[in-house]
Length: 440
Image 1 (cartoon, one colour):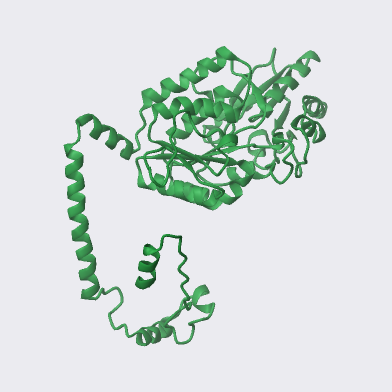
Image 2: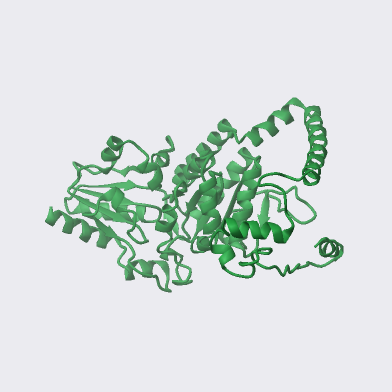
């Protein structure tokens, strides 16, 4: 093995070392068999294996020659550690404080808050319609300056995910001084490496891919949630709204699948204001990973004030009814604007309706029951709206509420045609609400 490693190190080209091993090596009865993997050896076979390997040390006893090697390695490490601490102590007080802040995982709270507020204020002032993937890029331009330990990337979709902020220099084999990584078409490797960066400390990794490809990242996303690491996944092209790429690229079940992972914060903003707020939430979530779910299609600015971080509430009334509400419409992301259009149609028919934006199930369900009940309200009709499957929604709207969304896979066509084809329209929401009212 050492000879192979030395040959690989000396080679100017990539090397693959193929290790031809035997499962359960040394076990007289189970070597080479799947039985060495799926069940314990047992006391008798352990004793036989010890004899076959010539291992006579008692259980948990470490032979002195092996222990001496480890102690020598520790001694070398102690000297290197002391030299490093001396270098750190020799730096300026400001540099040392900044380093310790980053390694401690503490955010520059004032700078981040100021950057987010500036993005929100400009979005409200400018108005217009912007895809939330672009809203995310606008936010990143501001917050990567405020939080310099952020290191971004994308799985060969930088121009589509919009994850590279202005001024971010790419990491290259010859220069590790950049803050953006071109990961290539390798979502799982990207997500795994992001976990490693977060575990090291001092860096806040975020990277992007299409939402449907979160399937490839899922094992590492799950591990980040299990370990409680601050890793941020930017998942764009979040529904049938991506259009002509068709059902292979249109996520339908993915929101439910991501929401099913314990300790993962799933955030689906409806406009630039909520997008900036969701980035602030993700950065402040020190002990859990986050997934930002972003649209390809343009969405109108719905929030008309840059007040407190409303997205942090998980769900809140974004558009009130003209009188006591008979209908409550609950939506996320790109469907919030659709809900607002349905609200207008209902109000025109004399049916007071309110719209609740639900950027995060996890944050909303973590609130006290009385607060959740106040947001859900007591309207006779409740309708959930999301361009995805219903799974998970009943925890908010109840199993007797209506739902306008997807029941199967998507199709290939322009986004607006797809929304009409699958019945995710303001008119369909109105019909669902009125049907609920008739049954009340």
